[in-house]
Amino acid sequence: MKRYAVLLLSWLLISALPFSSSDLAAGPEYWYSEARSQLHRALHSPPQGGVAKNVVLVVGDGMSLATVTAARILRGQQLGMSGEEHQLAFEKFPHVALAKTYNNDAQIGDSSACATALLCGVKANTETLGLDAGARFEDCRSSHMHRVTSIFDWAQKEGKSTGIVTNTRITHGTPAALYSHSASRYWEDDSKVPPGARKTCKDIVRQLVEDEPGRNINVILGGGRRHFLPKVARDPEVETEEGRRLDGRNLIDDWLRDKKKRNIRSQYVWNKGQFDGVDPANVDHLLGLFSYSHLDFEVDRDNSANGDPSLANMTRKAIEILQKNPHGFFLFIEGGRIDHAHHYNNARRALEETLAMETALQASMTMLDPSNTLFVVTSDHSHVMTLGGFGTKRGNPILGTDVKPSDVDQMPYTTLLYGNGPGFGRHPVSGKRDNMTGTDPLDKNYVQQAAVPRQWATHGGEDVPVYAQGPMAHAFRGVIDQTFIPHAIAYSACVGAQRDRCNEPQKDAACPSDPAAAASSSGVAADRKDNVSTPHAQRPALTVEAAAAAASASVGATATVALVLVALASTLVTRS
Image 1 (cartoon, one colour):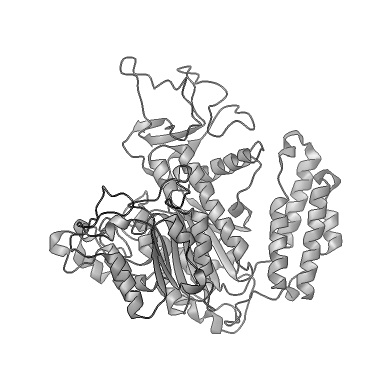
Image 2 (image 1 turned 30 degrees about the vertical axis):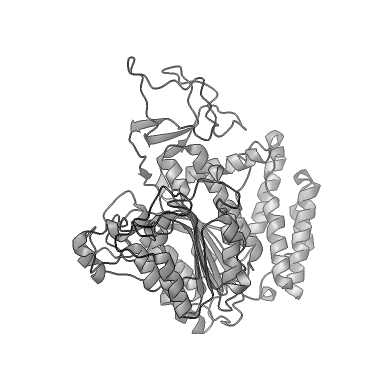
């Protein structure tokens, strides 16, 4: 516990160090000092070995690099800074990579096939789930011959608890890859499955409720009640809506019956009031379906008892349940509505959803031991939002317009724009693009302009970032394929194909020369009982003198004190 407290204090202090709005008037010595401080941290932060008892995988659906940059600036501006100098919580992680997101049959990735790569470790065909490249879209038979296991299967076989937290439907393209095998991502309930295939291919909800690993998932929090309820049932929240199942089954009731039959303490909730009343000490399996379809965007969310819990609130409750397992857990958190807002060319909501996801990550980090928890933040695919301007001033509202109008049509434009989507507009007579003069681009309903008309903006095809912190996080580096991510996580946690790593003789607990080779070769010995990282006493200690020397006078007193406190914290860990 002492080590945990000191490590957390160190992370918080380091996180607060490098950037402040004072750099607006900074001279050369400020930047030299910043570089010295960051270089010192890099050289005195050896790779962290050990085993991840817990894994938290956070996926921002559609979170491109441009989205991260814009969200960073927005958060900084919300905090009273110019914005550009800010860092999001996951941007402070020590290890970063870029992941390729193409599908087996597509240059631009689809969410379900990307999720299969990200969560199962194999390339898949567009719009299929939990199947390898031999499966074909809407071909029921092929789904039986080409199934692949997910990281949830691997974790459960090692006795770990598992949980899903999302603000999309639980059966949506990304979370469904954790537990289902479907020739179509759209087969969320039996009404979407072709009649000729219903007897041989289960819909996605049935797989969640009846099959492994779905029926063993401890925490399931999200939306999508419509796919659990029969046509004859009215939705409890939106009484004008009814269920969509044609088989007459209520799969919420079936989920509860299954848990009762297995003597598992379980609970189902569908609004924030019920959710807040859940006692994690007395619940081992929790199903929360808070919306008929997807949950509301964060800026629209009803925070009353009749509304929805936030992504951060769901994360906290999930961890309180999952961390009761002495073998640890795997928690999947999805900021799923980033993608939806981008599809609408609605940058404001996309950025706010990114920040809500960051808040959920921060909630998890305050509850877990950084020495035995691997945190990975990434995206399933990119989007076509761009960030650009000419001579745009520091601190310009990230959702605002460039400082100068277009030099072609003399009309203003926002610094955030889209390559295609519903924001395309032309004057019916002149043919010129719509003039946004008189509109408010900061309004949550504002739709950014797009270059090409589409009802629904497409995904982007460029690589997406991967941020990692924790045991063996240094495996995430360079340009990798998306399929590598679950294998690297498995290596850190000793699950799946990497389960025997923890039983092998110790070699290099710090840094295998090749992370790809490390995913399939012998690695480090680890204490499976305690799941602790490499003893800090074996690591180079950061001395008080070195920390003080690294802090130049131009950094300021606060930074100097913080560096000294970090050094003291490191000394305490070394002596403990």
